[in-house]
Amino acid sequence: MELFPEIFVVVDKEDARSLGIQDGESVRLLYRSNSEGIVGKIQPSKLVRKGCVAVSFHYGHSQLGASRLPISKGGIAFLDGKKSR
Image (cartoon, rainbow, N blue to C red; front, side, top):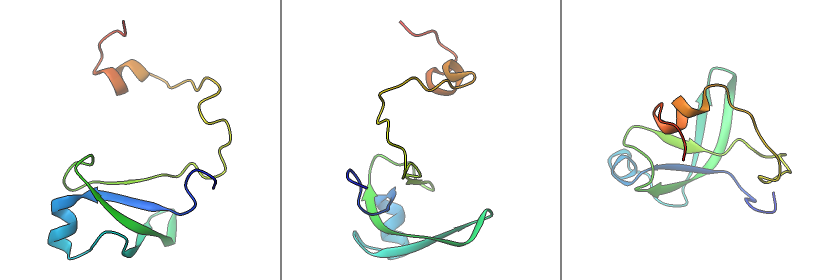
């Protein structure tokens, strides 16, 4: 909560424009495991692909990168199967 005191829903700038939603406007995201959804503020960005959204679900996490987090097949997921240097 110290780093991100509220939830942001990051969307492609063109998507936000075509949906008629503006920076800072509140939206509700609904999904299968939470039919009530979550409410967050829209943050248009060029960093998210068109048709996608990015939402941080790490609230309550306190290590802030201070420990290892093993990811099964991480090289494939993050490096397109290429070995790290």
